[in-house]
Structure formats: structure tokens, C-alpha cells
Length: 176
Image (tube, rainbow, N blue to C red):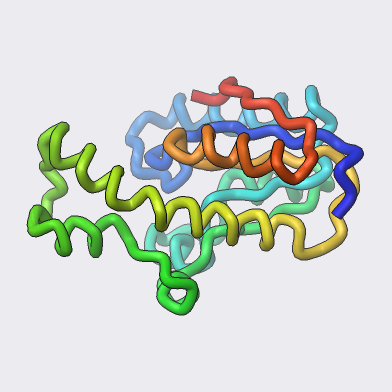
């Protein structure tokens, strides 16, 4: 894995990513922002926190990032493991953690304290997941600037992981 190129991390809204937002203007702006970000930073590879199983779950043929990458001649990888892969890797879902803590709610109407408890107990599984993302993002020999798309709670640790692996890394937060 060559480290002579920069890595960028862009935190994204999962509601926009999964098309759960009703605001079409937000979706249009997100796609424009992705295109502009890829152009500005001369991105050659996009690694996205998403899986094939998530595409099916949300009824999507592809993500906006996949489409932008394809239109721009940029390589793209869905780096999130699906449920079976997570199980084999020992990565629990937040739902599983909430059940183990005895605070699971179907409607996810958690208090701030409950959210904090779930996030704290899920942290070790997030770290495993982020390590897996890197192995998938760099499964092929990547040459050129890479853009990681992930939720905000992963940014800090992903920055740390990439720096530890010798990358020049920058957090950019242009697409909100």
C-alpha cells in the first residue's frame, strides 16, 4: 500500500446517503458537493461506509457517491461489512449492544444518556469495523488521493488509523 498520496475523510449524513431525507434540494446539493470535492482534491478512489446489504435495505441501485465516482472515472468501494461478515468479524450492531444493555427500543427514542451508553459500549466494535474498512479500501493497490465517506462518529479514529499507517490525512467537512 503506497502512502505517497493523501487521504481525506468527509463526514456525511446517513439520512442523505440513504435517501431518507425528504428534502430534494439537500440531495442535489450533496451530489454537487461530492463532485466538487472529488475535483478539488483530485480524488482517484472513494471508499464509502455502505454495503451491498444496505443498498438492498434502502431500495437503492447505487449510492450517490458510486454514481459521482462512476461519472468522474473514479474507483469506488463499499467498505462496510454486511451482517454475516460483521458476525464473523465479531462486530456487533448498535441494536445488539442496546439489547445487551437492556435499553433497546424499537423506535430508537433513546435519551441522551442511553445514546451515550450505547455509543460507549459500541466503541470497540466501531474500531474493529474501521480496521475492516481500511483493509477493504486498500484491497487493491491504490495509487492516488483517496476520499473516505463515513458518519461523523468515525472521523476521529479513522484519522488516527490513517496517520498511524503513514498517510497524510485531512478531515474535510464540506458536504452537510
